Image (tube, rainbow, N blue to C red; front, top):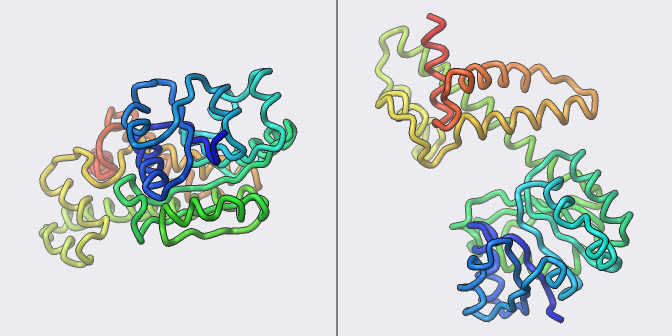
Amino acid sequence: MSELTFVGLGAMGSAIVHVLLENNCDLTVWNRSQEKADYLVSLGAKRATSIEEAIAASPRIMICIDSFPNTQKLLDTDKIRSLLPGKTIVQLSTGTPAEAREAESWITGNGGKLIAATIMVYPISIGKPEAQFLVSGPENEYQDCARYFSYLGEDVRYLGSSIGASAALNLAVLSRLVANAIGIVHGAHVCESEGVDLVEFARMFPEGDRAQTIVKAISTNDFTVDGGASVDVAAGVAKSLQSQAKDLGINSELPDFSMGIIQRAIDAGYQDEDAAAQIKILRRDK
């Protein structure tokens, strides 16, 4: 037995495991592509050769894959369901509050407990003071796992027992980012239409502001994703916001409006470009 199992060794998962090993955690690791575990095993992690072995190895299971539904698909076998009673599952991924609630219902229905955690930084920041995590779920289970989060960053925010709280706060932050990007793109379009140098527009914002990368992309006509988010990523956020609004029956005008512009950019083939590429849709309208 180990104290903690970690499932999912992509860029983020590997960064987290590396920091946990540096803090002398006793870890079992598993990934569908076994070679991704090799380096971490060389650092002291134990290798599980199957997902069943990984779940059986520890009372606490951290899972870092892309969604709650995909986690359920991974765990939804007779063998794994029989292993879940008494286990604490810590889901490290984004999703909607409704998806978190559905996941909690499934996990608790099979005898386990669920903690939902959203990672608010890139892998390079894991283990550094700026690393921020939003965490929600039953308090006893959170307290049992709190020391692991403390190794990963100094800004860990426990939001209470409502499992959807971390997903909700993450969506709220992302709502600002998506709407902000559209506002910056429109601002650049205003400047273009009035003959104002985009350099002057960029200078209105502090260094490091997202406006800097958006305006640079527009002024150079280079929409390669470099430190920002793609049109496709923005679409995923807008769709999640639409879904949350529908689930709770709240106003959806902002995500609907955002999705309208984003979808037109996708239809034009710009889905893999920086969100700044939405300027090309506005230019067409002229």
